[in-house]
Length: 114
Length: 115
Image (cartoon, each protein chain N blue to C red):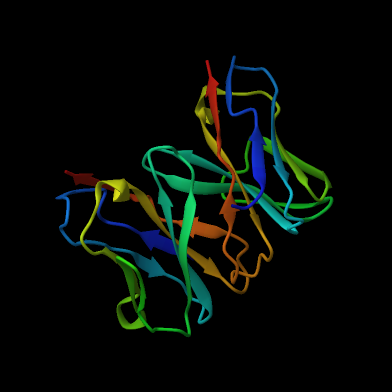
């Protein structure tokens, strides 16, 4: 199994509070991704990173920001959480973003915004 | 634009039956990659297979097989002699080589295999 951990694994927070989710990898892969999974929507890309300090937006980036100061860590921040951001968040890593390489996923973080 | 359609939302079968999960995709690129992932009830996402657009050979791995047909833009997944452990949500996904930086997923098919 790819060495990917996510923390926390579960979090309950209140509307308007900031939340940071962490993804940590031990595979030294260059590319990292954040997805959210919602019933009826499958997985949708929030942001991705193609190197340290290099990030870009995905399909559903509004309300989220990311940072990557080290190869192994990719942080997802909800500046002011809303109930619509209640979801399961998955981090993924890949050796390449060019479409040819599979992405390996972390165990997920279940976030509930009350 | 990329799009993946898994028309079957839920499928229920009895153990030992064969079952096929459908995946239809849309892309303007000539070079692209198709994937299947499995999400068991425990929640993790498990990579099953990757296929590139230039390789239309079908693939078999144990009880799993995949049928890729560019003519119909389909990449279907068949489980032969299904088992209870195959119960999961299965996702088909598409990635383009040029221009797009994302893995686009279908909405998934929930497979329940009853004993």
